[in-house]
Amino acid sequence: MSNSLTREVAAEFLGTFVLIVFGVAVVAQVMFGDGNSGEYLSINIGWGLGVTMGVYVAGGITGAHINPAVTLAMAVHRGFPWAKVLPYFAAQVAGAFAASAVVYAVYHEALNNLDGGVRGLETAGIWATYPQPYLSNIPGGLVDQIVGTAMLVGCILAIVDQRNTAVQANMAPVVIGALVLLIGTTFGHNCGYAINPARDFGPRLFTAVAGWGSQVFTANNYWWWIPIVGPLIGGVIGGFVYDLLITRFHPPEEDAPVD
Image (cartoon, rainbow, N blue to C red; front, top):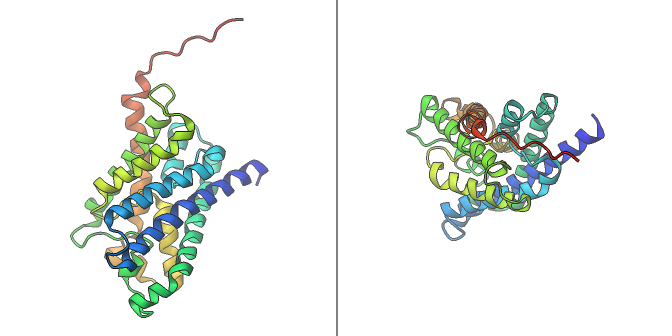
């Protein structure tokens, strides 16, 4: 692995770590606080600010994908090198796994106090997403994740589009964090708005090896693949729609001035 790719992979690992450590921790605090340490809006705000901080950490090095759906969309629509896609995926999942372990270490005693050491899906939901009982995997869950992630990626492309109303680079993390807050307050009810395969799979894998076992993969009719496949499809669709309706109508760029 080249020094350049190593640097990028390290940034994606740490950026994703920061995102997940704050995001999972806010869910833990709300659950363990039994209504005295926040509510659903607290979770939305925590995830939004977690994204903001993760983008600040990695943004100057990789642009802060910190999400395989973003990485795939950038490869499909923005010329991101395909050779870097899998290393980015691996770094993002590893960052999410490591963050999950840190939150577990911090809240281990609170977790035991809540469940007495008997790990069930209620507490597994601190780390990964699970659907409402009424939601089918297909089409309901898949559509939910496709739409949420399409909105995420399409709006990110607008935020960074220098030929649209792009924000200044140092403010992009704040606006992207606000975007995630918005998605959480509008598309969070069905299944927790994963909209990020690493955000869901890394923590889910951690719970599988940390005491919850295989139920985290078999629950809800094998729900686990929906927050992976749905966001990957949705990110590509979001980029396609933005380019179809916005990018291709940008006027031709002016010729560079001749010296």
